[in-house]
Image 1 (cartoon, rainbow over the protein chains, first blue to last red):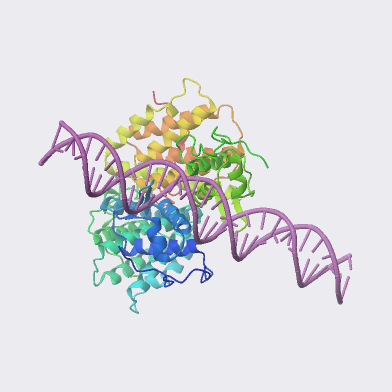
Image 2 (cartoon, rainbow over the protein chains, first blue to last red):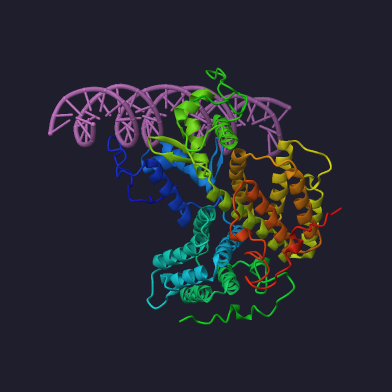
Length: 265
Length: 265
DNA sequence: TAGATACAACTTGTATCTAAGCTCGCCGCG
DNA sequence: CGCGGCGAGCTTAGATACAAGTTGTATCTA
């Protein structure tokens, strides 16, 4: 099967020119394969071979092998000895797990922020309120919007000030790209909705209300799942849920405003 | 510098015997280097070279290279181009981040369990109550006790039924081994204390009280930090904290029983 | 025709080789 | 005495060669 190359380098003579652009061959191989993985050029369950990819990129098998290894560590591939690299399929179950993990990590950031004091909360809230992903005046194209969305959430997680969690969060976001690339159902006013939700989350933080922020965040991620056509699990329940107020039983009725997200500005 | 080999294979002729025990050379290299990393044979900041390790294990540099790559992905090494593999130092800040991440993931498991219903909670509680790590009648040796402790927590996380989080949790535990191997301050009745805390957590789950379980878990991990001589951050605060009841202000005084851990059986 | 067997094609695993980058110490110069 | 050039010796990056394992298929037998 033939695939488009993913970084423009496209089969340079490579005899003596070798590492054309100064960027390492391993990096090029990684970027190419990951690109194909993310945009769906490599289908679920496909069996890749080092030699095939190496030939397509006009390099030896060594850098491709290293790229495969890295992608296996990231959960995109599974390497079967003497057989090939298997493209791990994405499933509804994985989407659920993915969004759950995101919910946990982003909620952590809010919690830690709250534990650091109201001022920290408000500062981050103000910062996020000014973020492009929380501003929907000017229309953005697909890629731009996606990057902004991703950055918004990355900043939120970064506010948790835990490099381990931030790193793991980044890895999760990469995997999610694969999901959304496959499900590709474009909701026309999806962008506006997401923007509103971002605004609401930032507002809750700025007002020093972490519990509301977490509730809104949960609703936001629930939306992502629904957009993928997947039924949200118990952790995404509208009322209480896990990261919610108290026990399972307890404060009810406080969830009604999860949808009545007061526009912030 | 000479290091002990970590898997008994120790410099087989390897000329024609090649893959001695059927296990791949890459696997052997990985196990050896990780072993040295975990038990402190490789010191913080040390600069390893592929060739050195390859020679010590009587294999070519290729498998060692792959092992290094994998260990970099796991956060143990950092590879500097044309210079060597740098042993990432462990720090108090990392310990804090590590335990924070553990708290988040284990709390997630409890939350999800709770969201699945009281029966699920009680079942896992009963399971954990019967776990070796929650039983302190028979004394265990160091290694045995450590394995039991690790398994106890792994089971708790597994109950969250999220493979992504479970995987990331495992990686964190590996890194923690490195920390504890270095700080090595053996508290004589530490084992008994940890056992009691495990019992208390299991009991809380069995009684269907996720909030108490989370509170006890937080105290448990706070203990780990203190044992490492590190001041617990805001998330490990005795009262409320983040994963706690409601907002920052709210139910107070409910934390007194965090120490009055009623013995389970 | 159904099943077992032998073979061919393809794959990865590992060793080895070449080229190039980085560091550091030596040496000459100001 | 301080400082910049320069080369030796280290390191990895990547290519290639070869050995060994796996699978699909053709063929042979009952």
